[in-house]
Every structure is written in C-alpha cells, then in structure tokens.
Length: 251
Image (tube, rainbow, N blue to C red; front, side, top):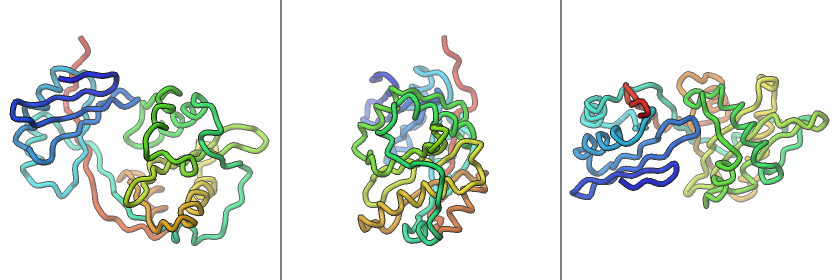
C-alpha cells in the first residue's frame, strides 16, 4: 500500500492497481482497474483492512453482470444513480438574459475559507454529498488542478448584503468541459440566480467556440433533471454508485 494524505493505493502481485481518494465528507472514492475485474476482490479486501469509513465505487449501469457480482461479493450495494448529460451551450443561452442583484465573479476574487463555507452550505442539500465539510486549504489545493479555469469557476455575491449566495464550477476538460457543481443557498432557491450563473459561464464558452458540456444529475434531484431537459440536454449514460455495506470502524 502507498499512503499519502487523502490518497491511498494498493497493488497485487500481478500488477493490478487501485486508488482511493478521500472526500471532504470522509468517504473514500475508489478507482478500480477496468482491465482486471478478477483482481477486484483482492484489492477491495486490502482497502477494507487499511481504511475506515464508507467506500464508494461509481460504475456505468450498463456494466456486465460480472462487474455487479464482484461488487456484491465484496460487500457493496447500489445506493444511488446519476444521469450523465451532454448539454448544448447554445441551449443554455437560448432563454432571455437574466438580470440579478448579484455580482458574478471568479472564485479567485474571494478568500478560500469563504468559498469553502459557501460550497459546504450548498452541498448539504445535494444528494450524495451530505456531510461534506471542505476547508479553505482543500479548496485552494483543488485550484492547482490543470483543468481549473478561473473564468469557469464563479461565485455570486449579493450587491448590497455582500453575502455569497451561489456558485458554478466547470472543469475545463477535453474534449468537452464538465459542469461539476451548480448551486445556490436556500434563500435563493426557486429564483433565477442559478440560471444567471449558467448563462455567465455559457457566454464564455460560446465565445471560445465550445459547443457542448457534460454534467451529472442525481436520479432524485428533479429540479436538476428538469433544468437539463429544458436546456436541450441529451441523457447519454446512467451511472450507479455502490457503497460497502459495513464500513470498518476506526481502531
């Protein structure tokens, strides 16, 4: 096992390798080797012995029976599903431009602790991220990602109250950028602030000649599902999140 802060990896004698990244909610996101399903049992057994807390594995719903069987034998069960969307940038700009009382600026315009607090408050209501407690230090580290683009990671600040009320985070992936998070605080639900954030990013992407972005919505999040369909989104895949049934307690 290789162990660094927030990241661990294991390998078998025949060279099969697996990584685990710890999320701010304490759960571990497991990256299994797609080319060696037969090694999963051994790798997951190593992980179960070394780390405590929940382990999460995300797989396509179209995975073969063998994949599901291996996960079940390792003590995992499906806990939720997501729809993966391909969204046309033109569709995001199709509606009339939204006017808002907020200033929409790059995440780099604000201190990391304030943005982390905003992110935490939004994630409390996002399926799959309840219990998420990120820090300013973790947020700053995430901005070192080569896919970070300050023009695509924005926060909304109220013009008079000065509060931070919403954010949108798009990672500049290839071949198409990925919408990683879009959310507003509870007082701004059912307003047009989320759409204002989307339009701000879409305007930048459109000017760059980007035609589509990808995004995921939880199967239980009807609001996000409707937003994707209303903007011309095409559902391209369903993924299933599996969790180990009995997380090992810390020693």
